[in-house]
Length: 94
Image (tube, rainbow, N blue to C red; front, side):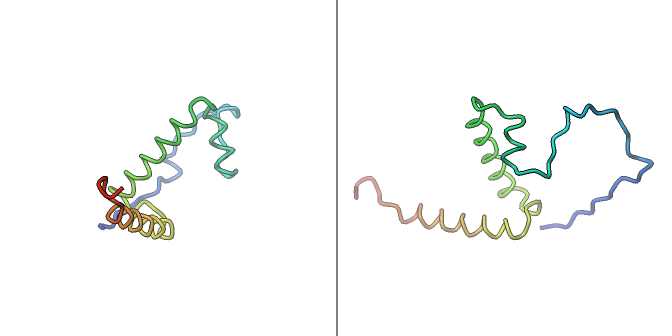
């Protein structure tokens, strides 16, 4: 994996805009609270499916963006999934 340098914007480069309080999401709260603040119950399954696909894409294509302890868990789970897939019974054996 190659290292990338990320430069933080200086205070002079930050654009300040007016924001309505009701447009803000408190990201310090529990993830479920954040999710419920903008995902309706009707769309929840679709939303979770998109999160899973995005997480898998990050794991496959940009693992450097995953916290190391989480990445280790993903790697272990992926190895178990591969092993389970390779050891599953064939249709004839069922």
